[in-house]
Length: 620
Image 1 (tube, one colour):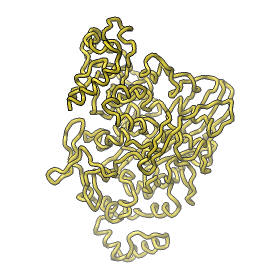
Image 2: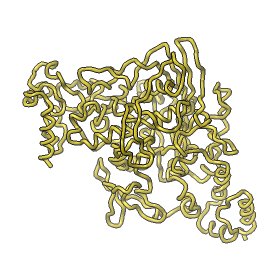
Image 3: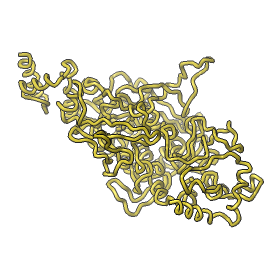
C-alpha cells in the first residue's frame, strides 16, 4: 500500500516544473512548525510542492508562491492533486448534490414559477451518460443569470439572481461566507480540513498569524469529521446541522446579556436559542456515524433531490417491529461501523471509537402510548416515518421576504474572477459583482411541533416552511414589485412547505394528542396568524397548507409530496382521541377490540358505530 501512495506522489510531483520539488526544506524556512498533512502512510511522506506546487527552491515569498495552489483540493485543480490517487472519489463528488445543489436550485425556481419540479440546473454544468438508479439524471445545465431589462421567464428569473447572491454560498465549488461559524475551504477540504467557528489557525506554523481569520485549525487532512464542520454549511435551509445540536436562530434579540452587558455573539450571522438536541448527538454520535461515504461523496449518479441520494433510513440501524437490523443500508450496502457483538447490534463511533448498543424496535418494551403506536395500530409502522413521531420539534421560519435592489450590484457566488491561482478563484474576495443586492427577512419563527403530511416516499413526515417566498423589487428608492407571491407551474401558490427529516430525534415521541388532536399537525394551521392584515397577498395563514376539503394551498417541491387529503385528515383527526384520555394500555385495547369489534374504522359512520359500541360494552 505504501508503494502505491509513493508512486502516486511521484506522479503528482512530475506535474511540477523540474527542479522545484526537490527542496522542500526551504518551504519550512518560513513555515517552521507546520503540521504534517497526515499520518497515513504515503500521504505522510508527501512534500509541500507535491500538493501545493510552487517553487520550493525560492527564498522570497512571491517567488516561492509562484504557480502555487493555496488549496490543492479545490475542484478546479483537484484532478492534478487529490485526483491522482482518488480519481473515482473526485468524479463522484463533482456529480454529488454537495457540488451541484440541484435540489435547492430546482426547489427555488419551482416556487418562483420558473420551472416544474424537475431538476434542470446545477451550479456548473455536469453530465452522466449512464444514469444508474431511479431518479438519476443525464445532465444538469449551468444556472442562468438574470437581466431585469428583459422580460421575466423560465430563462430569466429573479430566482436565479437570488440563488446566486444568497443561497448558493454553500457548495463545493465555493469557499463560502466569511463569517463566524461559516469558515471553510472549497473542494475536498470543505469537509476534510477542519475549521473552528472563529476561523483561526491553532497549529505550530510560525508563518501563519494566530489572529488571522479564514484559516484552518491545523494543516491537516482527516476523515474524522465532527458535526461542527458540517454545520459550517448546514445552518440554512432545512437547518438540520444546527437542529441536530439543539439550536435554532432567535428573532435577533441577542439576549441573555453577557457579563459585560453586551449581546450574545453571533454564528452564521444569527443569535441562537438552545433547545433539545437530537438523542444521537447527546449520546456522543456525529453526522458521519450515520451518513455513509456514499451519502457524502455521492455514488457517481447526478441526482435531483437529497432523498434520492441518501442511502440510510432509521430502520437500517434500529430494525423494524418484525426483525432486527440487517447491518446494511436501505440500498443493501454494509455499514462499516455497525456490527453484531454478544447478541447486540453495536455501532462504533467514528470520532471516538466508543461502542454504542443500538436499541432494536423488535426487542423494545413499550409503555401504553408506545404499545398503541407500534402494536395496536400497525399502520403507524407501515405508513409513518419514525421521525414523524420522534422528532418532537423542527425549525420553522414562516414567510421568506426577499428584496432585490436592481440599482445596486451584489456578489455572485457563481461568478468568480480568474487569477494566477485557480484554487483561490471561489474565495469571497474573488467573487464578481455580477448579481444584484438582496436583503432577507421573515414573518416569524417557531420551533414547536411541526405540521405533518405525505413525503415523496408516500409516508407521513414532518413538514416545515421552505420556502415561503414573497418578492419585492426596487430600483434604489423606486418600488417596482411589492410582496409578490408566485404561482407554480402546477397552479399552486409558490408559498411553500416541504417534508424534512429534522434531525431532532428524541427517545420520547410526540404524544398521541400532539398529532391526532392538532389542527396544525393536520396541515390546517393554528388559526392565529392573519396573512391579509400583515400585508401578504394570500388568503391563507402561513401555517395552513391544506383546507378542510383536502385542497392543497401551498406548494411542495418534492415529486409526490403533498398535504393530507380529506380522507386522511378524517382518519388522523379521530384516531387516538381515546388514547389521550384512557391511557391505552394493552388490556384496554384488547377489551376494545373484543367487545366493540373494531380496531380502526375506515369511515366516519363506522367510527361512530365503534365508539357507541365501546361506550356501551367496554365498561360492562
